[in-house]
Amino acid sequence: MLNIAIDGPAGAGKSTVAKAVAKDLGLIYLDTGAMYRATAYYTLQQGIDVCDEEAVKKMLDGMSMNIIYEDGAQQIYVNGLNTTPYLREHYMSKAASDISALPPVRYKMVDLQREFAKTHDVVLDGRDIGTFVLPDANCKFFMTATPEERATRRYKELVEKGQSVDYDTLLKDIMQRDYNDSHREVAPLKQAEDAEYLDTTNMSIEDVVAHIKEVVHIKTKPQHTATASSEVKVGDKRAAKMKKYYKEQKSFAFYRFLSVILRPIQAILWPIKVVNKQNALDVEGNAIYTCNHYSKVDSFIPCFKLFKREAHILAKYELFKVPIAGWFLHKMGAIPVRRGEADIDAVKAVLKVLKDGKKLLIFPEGTRNKLGTQDMAELKTGTARFAIRTKSPIVPMLYYSAPKLFRRNWLYIGEPFTLEQFYGARTPEQMHEATEVLRQKMDETRRLCNEYVHGLKNKWKKGVK
Image (cartoon, rainbow, N blue to C red; front, side, top):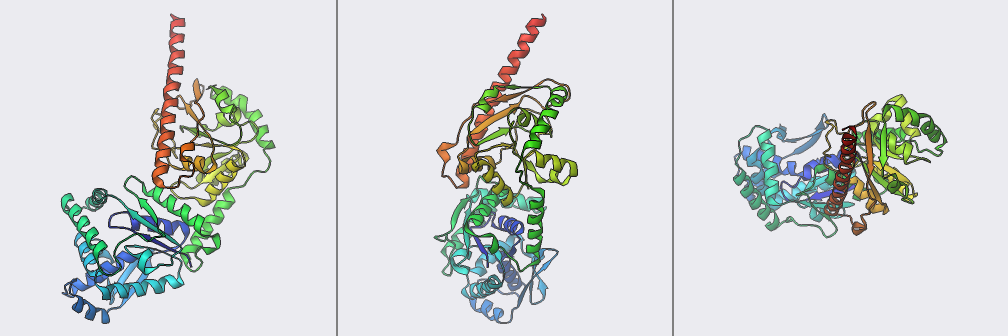
């Protein structure tokens, strides 16, 4: 069985990340925190103090808990009562923390969780999953963030739900809960020795999920993924569909033929001059070409003028669904990627291309700039990860403006650089630092591009005068 344990204090984002990881890997997500909340809610409904150990223990003797999935969502029934709608009320956080500190409650919940994990491939999140509940879990993670950041997240979540809350009260509750969870006698909150530490304060959910999935992929083998649940079958179908979309090109003879035929057409429709072309051509072996992204034709110029023998481009997999476009992309050596997910198949394909000493074009923003401005969106960390793992140099490129029919434009090639100072890095923090270096290089390329083009335009104006 594949068991993934994600621990950490309240508000670190464990549940959101665990659900995303489980969905993408085709595993079952068991909300352990909800089990304690359900027990606390039922206890309060019975008029019992959640801190009264003897009364709670007596109640547990006659308490049954059933966990079922309705429309893909986990529902927890306690003695026939569906407690799920009430589990995220503000007052439930402290009640759950108080009742979870009682040994009888801990032992009952742990027994239920362990039995479930024995027969299912599952992702569990909580305070003591890796240290107490599933000490032999295949993969363990400890997620945290500053109390202020966690309070801010919780505040936004509750406000969006229309609830009136006080930030200072939330912060105080979180800090008190941290103390309670880390000082309780039974299975206190702490990082397992073999768990990977993740500070999510400055990380997006996407980055955290991608990192966890990469670690899981490294530590486990494909056959270890779940096969017992219907959710797994969905994951298998998606993987099979992905392989169908991606066809590794063995010969690029047709690509070279296409480039010869289409190059003059491109020159007429999109007259774009490549500036500092030699910067790109002088790079030997593998390399990652990064470029801003305005339109679907952005990849034509690099392919036709820089990748003359063969091309490799990272493109969103939705494009491969279109029959003609999909066929054309295959011939262009494109690699489909599911955006917003840790796409293991795409990662493998990219790493193979780069490790084979070839060149790859990536749009590091991950999406098109539909506004047509010169400002780039936030860069994804994937580009830096690839460059670091394969020790590939990066060639920064920028279109001066959005390519338009019959409009003059420029593609400016910056100085190649490496992320050598980050070679061997693995933590999300290091990846963010490396991505910031890439951002600075792209900004510098933008400055040089603008200086070049504005200089030309000034010369033309003087020539006209």
